[in-house]
Image 1: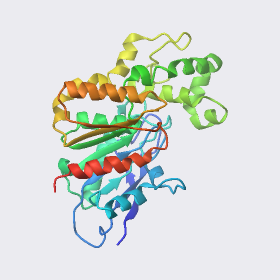
Image 2 (image 1 turned 180 degrees about the vertical axis):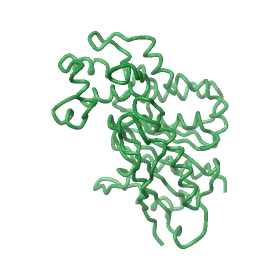
Image 3 (image 1 turned 180 degrees about the horizontal axis):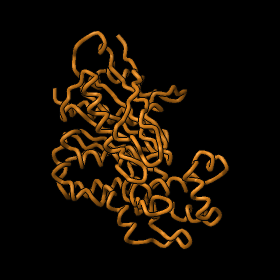
Length: 331
């Protein structure tokens, strides 16, 4: 018996007519464990959200240096460390790179898209279709989003795993503001518009990836349909000075700022796991530590780990979170 990757083609109602014209029909890779096709057993499901500018399918690519997710899951099951589970790998990309799996009028309804996928997987596969057997995990932007789903939809997901997620925007995003301003000094509003129209071409010509990342986050956190760009920047691009009222819109999505508003939902979870590398290049370690302190003060159970690495190429940490998820699942 062996595992299998099934690549479904999923037509999303939620993404139809999205403002960027991005595809509403997308590939949805599904991992089914060894024995799935030979039996009638039902399985828990883990939804895995990749980071900014990535599709779920990337976790299944062959790598000379590391296991892909199918090999990792097969090994963990074979070693008895993880129960057999179904894994789903959504494609949450947009023209700008991603929408943080949020509903935003500037990019589309990506939160609803993920919830659609949950219903689809439960209808097509032999799942244990209840919150106690359903989890959501992610890395970087995907980790941020996993936390948000735990806060908003604890009635759907009872186990959350966040790897190096976006936390504490004061240290995570603010360092990118001067980088954007230097880009804007050369490009101006016309260049920014060109970047938004065709990010791939602009980046190939040498545009800073950070410029796109800042614009994408603004499209998530401070959308404005009346703006020529579809969003408001939280700072003056000529001086870098913050616009407090717009920056507050960003902070209204920051997990460390809003955790206090979701205390009961987070307490109801069967697992809240998060981690971060101590050399994380985006300062996410400090946000993770702040989140741990605030969860402790709110008496919310959690598991937190730090590991000796940076932000990139840390997919191996899923071996830790998948085991934590498996341990938290009721038999």
